[in-house]
Image (cartoon, rainbow over all chains, first blue to last red; front, side, top):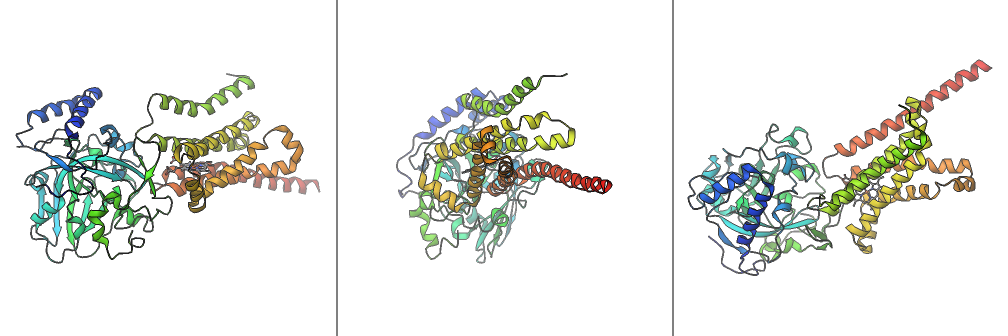
Length: 321
Length: 206
Ligand code: HEM
């Protein structure tokens, strides 16, 4: 189901997808990665038959066109998939594309626990398949003051949560990334307290903008972007968008989150994009859009204030940053 | 194999230039990644610190291995270190901030790692400005030597600057700081040992 009301971020109906997919196909031929190319062909053949979930790098079928489109130029596939903060695969942003390619995402199990009526271990397909996929073009603002525009694919997290029937005392949702140092070389050192943890307040988790993403640019997520499923909250700094999720827990109290545990005064639980609240070591007033030379002004809530500002109406955002 | 000092000088000169040439080649071939500006800033910062460490290695090499040629080249080494530092700072001002003086001044005042970087830059600039023979004469050898001892402080501050800018992974700055610590350690050890040897010889004399 797509939300029909027009908001500030949906300036126009997008016809950008086919063009982007076309570019991707050319990209594939250029890189000549035989395995991926094989996957692409397979993906195109099975586009309508959605019997099995497509493998890594394959096309996702039956995706609705995006109503969510800021009308800004998309960041190219190359940049989106080669410039990633995913410390499990190395601390350099160029690391994950190199070290994550053999990452196994099939089979993938997500454990659902805590205050809900439907806890259990869900096969990834069973968790996702009941929900129609949507494409959503979102601005993506990293806490490091760079930004992108990314065409994600996924389902509203709210739809999945409703199915899991949280109980009344579920005030927060906690998420965990896979912990597997054999596959994730970055986890062999304690750069962060593994496994990576993130969390949302229930109203944030249920917000229509919050996306449980399984794909980008029409295809399943590449490993370096958080395969097979990750969160995307476009009004928050990128590190809130936890990748390669294996556990979802409904809890009563605010859950601990990895970057907050690493440096409490630098990374808050909320991490809403806010040009008025600097990171202690750098300004958040501006950002560099990948591909541009001059920095541009950062917008409050990354430009999604009309939709989400009400969630934080009574809060001092310089304190709850 | 023996090579002349002159050829060795040029060889070392070329080695010190090679990171810069590599960067230019990467830029030319489009190999700077998705965020070239960040890549350049960090690359030049890395090589600023590394070339400073190379310059600081001259005396320890003499102490530990008895080599004298690095000490004879250290003006060239020090000026290369300054060149990378100057490029790193110019890149920050020209490419990264694009002359946004308001933002630059705020950064220098508010961001401690930038303040530290600025102090390091000022120290190394004053050393580069007084690196010619005439300056030694004008300042007097003693004052000149004392001034140029600030290079140790510059090395320490360079590492502090690096430590302060990383988000979580302190291993790379720790490696650089470890090398600096080793180089300074050799000097301190040598200093202490030659002092105690002095004492011994003094005693023998008396
Ligand atoms: C006015 C002086 C300086 C300024 C404004 C400055 C600025 C910066 C900036 C903006 C970064 C990158 C931060 C980031 O990408 O998040 C950086 C990194 C760095 N700088 Fe400087 N810097 C200065 C002086 C120095 C000096 C004198 C040295 C060495 C002796 C140095 C060595 C480094 C190193 C090693 C890094 C880290 C590179 C990496 O991440 O690999 N900087 N500096």
